[in-house]
Length: 116
Image 1 (cartoon, rainbow, N blue to C red):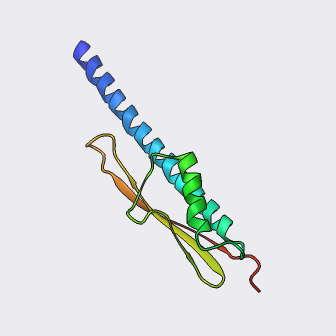
Image 2 (cartoon, rainbow, N blue to C red; image 1 turned 60 degrees about the vertical axis):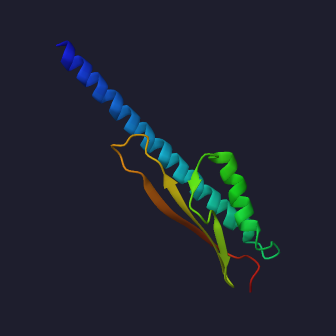
């Protein structure tokens, strides 16, 4: 009975680590989405410069999830006549070799205010 108990306890702890890893990754994904939303909101005013989006998104990301690993480009913002779009590729590391790492491509956009 002791061997079964040890095996069940080890499996339970392994499952707990996998669930905690998924929860941390989901939090980081939400933090990046919130940062992108704040970035496009900050840059949606016509008077703000082209740097406002990425600057604000990076500020929010530094507060919410400083350890998040973005892709090579980091947060990129683009502006058209009516829309501002922010993009980021996020790489989520796995804590265990059993579970693969994954990448998420996130995007936020909003209409620029004050444009006729």
